[in-house]
Image (cartoon, rainbow, N blue to C red):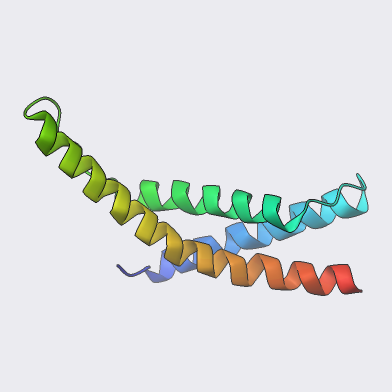
Length: 103
């Protein structure tokens, strides 16, 4: 699985938007989300992007065991792809956030 240039660019833009939103919350609303909450938000965004970009084919009807196998393969593929996206988001959101909080 590889991300195309456009996908990496979009992940970078989403990471920038998330970072700015977190800074806005910290500055204006005095809400400082914990590291665990930020990680969950990033993972949910990564899963959503992975699903949208992979669009696994799910057959309708047929053998239930075959459907279970296809669903498991699709889920593993999406989560694997989401892991790649998550690592990029983590590097682009968490490290600037740590530097911002230290200043």
